[in-house]
Length: 186
Image 1: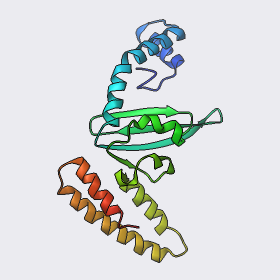
Image 2: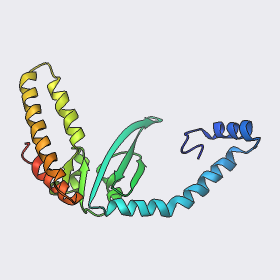
Image 3: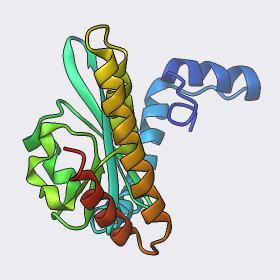
Image 4: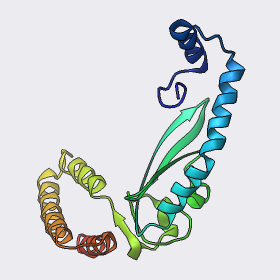
């Protein structure tokens, strides 16, 4: 827990245990405990992974960084009932594809090209990503008046679509309505 939830290095965790509780423990013993905890959590992780892979609506996003000069990416796949995180050596389509399981349900994501394995008719573009994109358009110096007008029009369409969503019951229906609404934006 110290090295996971509290983000302490093994050496810092070792020092904390000694200073607070008088427990002297080797770095190897801490690594061993981490391994046992990981093993104990495997079935729970697998259950959460199945839940999000087979959910009617799932959300995904990623962030990347470099470690020792190598690009790494952290992917999130979430449903109403569970969230799964996985770190990949890169974020290319072939690498991340197994995380998503069978192409089932609605996938809510940004507009990244890595998602071409998911039929566009079962994709919903994340509204927050769209808003951020249109704000960036409106902040451009050249042609900003026309960009603001387009952004305002898209915002009005989005508000109407969201109002329709609020009148619906199931997540799958909500997602399909939003996908249908998004098709009028282009």
